[in-house]
Amino acid sequence: MKLSYSLDEAVETVRTGGILAYPTEAVFGLGCDPRNLSAVQRLLGAKQRPADKGLILLAANIHQLSDFVPPLSEEIKERILASWPGPVTWLLPVHEHISPLVRGNFQKIAVRVSAHPVCEQLCQRLGHPLISTSANITGKPAATTVQQVGEQLEQHVDLILDKPLGGRIQPSEIRDAFTNKILRAG
Image (cartoon, rainbow, N blue to C red; front, side, top):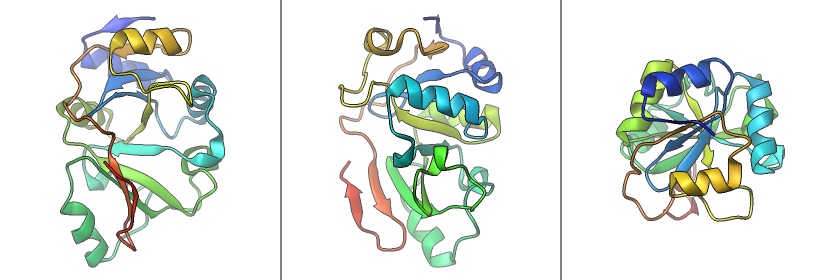
């Protein structure tokens, strides 16, 4: 397990197909390049997470999602942009070519524009979204410290970005953009 305080190292880890543990609003996230399907498979294996559940994409802005999400109506854009950047994950339609490893067995994809400065900087420097799922083995508590990440995922994570969490107690809320229904309270 390699620890780093360097955003440059974190970006390089993702660009070279690695798995990164990084701070989010409430817990450490586990991420990789969503277009690198071998990295996505490694991440799913590390978490022992079924691929059919899908993963969240974290972006610096809505424009980074255009390769994953078709154009949205003005009404939907207004709804989601009212909560971004922030701790709300939205289910949006997904382009058909996006792998089921990323979207699961769904015709929608979970996406968020984070207000956490580390998440925002990571995605800005990458120039694309990042997979964002809690850093833990499925069924175990989400890691809130570097030590907890190491205890659960030491052999599977290429780099842990040792920066502070965003101070939230709960993970992001998840909402359906079309119905505005809350699927997970934040």
